[in-house]
Amino acid sequence: MGTHDPTQAEACATANFDTSSSIAIRKSLRQNLPQEINWAGLTSNAPAIEYRLRLGGIQNVASTGMSPVVWETNLQGAHLRNRGKVRDLYDVGESLLIVATDRLSAFDVVLPTPIPDKGRVLTQLSMFWFDKLSAVIPNHVISAHEFPASLASSKAILEGRAMLCRKTEPIPIECVVRGYLAGSGWKDYQKTGAVCGIKLPAGMQESQILPEPLFTPSTKATTGHDENISLVEAAARIGWSLAERLKEVSLELYRRAAAYAEPRGILLADTKFEFGLTGNDLLWIDEALTPDSSRFWPLDGYQPGRAQPSFDKQYVRDYLEQIGWNKQAPGPQLPAEVVTQTRAKYRDAYQRLTGNELP
Image 1: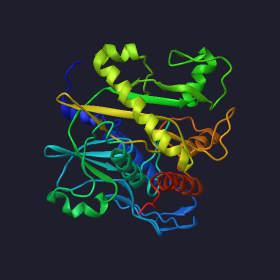
Image 2: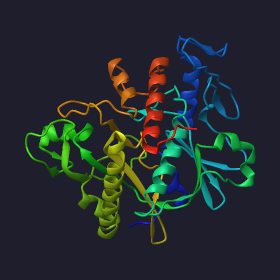
Image 3: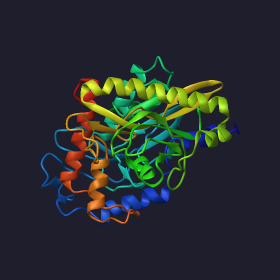
Image 4: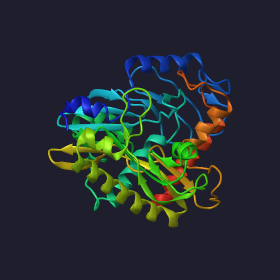
């Protein structure tokens, strides 16, 4: 495969979120505040949610009865490498610091309303899966609790939402595994009788379990949407040996995770993995089987032939579809009810899978 500048490659591990985007969103936060929230008075008509916007330093939203809600970080003692749609990426010497904020994106647009606890769920659930599935493949995490002394002043913000990681050369392929016929796979099947070129039996229903899990790689787009590609196309980009290895590892991770989740009331409909190289060593990077990278369905009430309720941000997507948003930036503010329900879904997924309440 071709060579990549490690710094640039790591920055691409999160979707591009450039300075102009950040400025536009912050301007939207100040100019398009939702009517039900009194930002100036730090109060809200929504139960248990208070917002506070503090300009300069850490863009922070405080909320009653829950951890501080982090919109954006500007850490002292580390060099900001990139802002992704959700994560802020810092260069800390020979390591990377990945901080999961509470930003939420939908249809490739970062929405102006954060979701309390979201970043902590993403990080802590990733750590849970990285540990549980470490026998399949090693991962890039050095620590999620101990950070360099230069970051001591940021300890409160980092706790529970940051990971100190090894630098890798990210492989420019997203490894999607599908276990059920849903989302773009269902749309593809309706048109072609196949998913990403893989032929399926006739007469299948929406949300039906597939005969076997499918590995359907896609490109990692720095702008716009990712593009589904075949295994042959993936191999043309990165070589057959590596492409086959990614398929093997991705399917094994999916099978083990799905088998673990189902007895706990969650169906893993599909998920996305990302991997990187350190020399010849393949590492699992980015996030692991979270509500942002996966489609989680409740087992209770599962019924093929229709769309399923979910523990992920599909709830937000459905709301945005209902209000007729044109899916162009800037995104609309989310009402307090949608924020509260989305937060509850993320926390519920964490509790079911780990057996513990989010600290």
